[in-house]
Length: 436
Image (cartoon, rainbow, N blue to C red; front, side):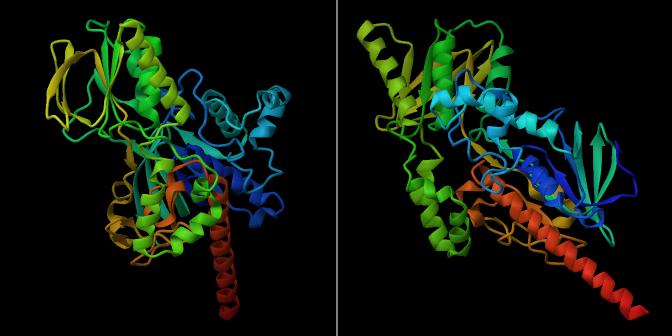
């Protein structure tokens, strides 16, 4: 394996190297700074992508973050960290210029550059272009079998799984050259055959759907864009200060300690902060475009509220989309060049990754059982702990799959591993003394 002894056992193996495990690598480095070599945590990471990327298909021109830059990789855990967004700006000689923007929300393009800068800067072993194929447990460690650029086995005392989310298409819809998820928007648009029908259909009612509609409408000036969603109208995202407290670190404690019934209530109350909701400014912009076209008598933007896509036929160089209006039951067929599904995501497949170890950890109807410090609950002896970054919304709340809490969460995971390592070292010393 690249740069690593085949006999080495690291304290932490990170599966996936997106923002969450990047923040973990930084937390490990900062944890180790004042420790003697024998007390430091060791780590290795694998990432299926060939290089660090963060939603490259949705880096739309001018698109900004939906959270403050202070919710970066480190600040809420360590305000003095060299890996903060502010220090990134300083090192790139843009701090004063950014201040003059008078905003808390940088563009996504700049934030991705910040993440890539941090990934290049942190001192950690990352094997890119490498996929974790399976995980097994031996007597004293986990063995992660790898394929790709760094084939072999990664051995670790603990595992942190951060495999991200997988795109979700509507039921019965198959991806094709002309039908695809918004997550891959930019490269899929670039690969489209020449437009013949000058029409796009976008399915979905969330922020991504609104952004895709706006991008298509602006980029393809001679094409019509049809937005289809089940709501009567687009709902504004609740970005008010009190509602945003659902993303505070303290809210994780409250959510975790709540009953299952209260958790469902809290999720229902605050879904509008993150799901099927669009920033008010974007809603107003889209409405203004639609209204201006009505005035001019030349329509390119169409909003199909209270509607559903009831059929998709991708053949003969076109996609025929049946759109049914719920209140009237009337159906119209749109012949278009592409269908973009901005229909959300599902958690990564933890069961598939764990394979035979799945039977050694507890699952419930909503997902895996997880401790407060993000450990899977074992049902049989394991050589160490398996932590999740993501896939814990049912136990830890809305911030589980978002950037909001990664700085705090990774600090909690590092402290948990450090406690276990220290306890294990004390037990080994006690056993040695007893054997003398």
